[in-house]
Image (cartoon, rainbow, N blue to C red; front, top):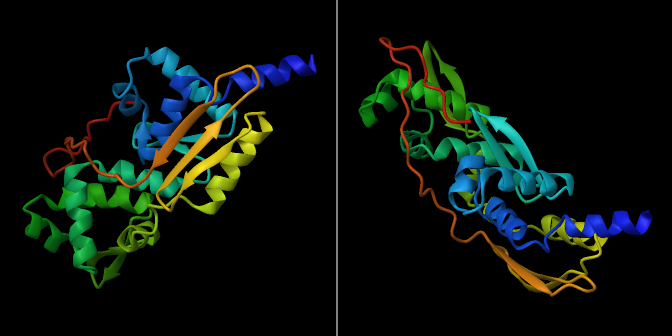
Length: 237
């Protein structure tokens, strides 16, 4: 019985090529949600969902619900607030607002709206999401609502989140060793990691995680509340 459990555990990790690809996508795509992952793969949604559950059971990934999306991210590589921040920043208008706050810290809502030619309710809508993700903080200057960078916003400014940490590497190696995959580091730098894994009776496999190409390729707009329209259109789940 014990041998059978060990064998089953081995088969639930990264020896499966699709599961390796899903794990790589989760690591390399901050703020990755289900439909974003599925659009990059050719497998059926049910199959992708099953592999995501297996990766979560193996403590390789975590998941959280944010602004109507089920977000997946790697344990120890990035924290939950960073993932939420990248979900927010996939929106082109949110990026413009964040960039304005980054370059004009302490600006109040009306100035941001006027400078970007958008409604002040749109600024508040996106800023509220940024606050939830610790991208920005709001403070009062008299009767004015102003914004400054939050903890995650400061990390992005310092470019200190685009790295593969020693903590992540150690945690990943421990999980792979625990599952008898005999991992070996082939290459490592602050933004790239290549690991070879093997298991008796199976062909060796290698996978590379690269964080050097982080970008916001997806741009989408949604209806946001204004004085004449207070209902936010829900995003896809």
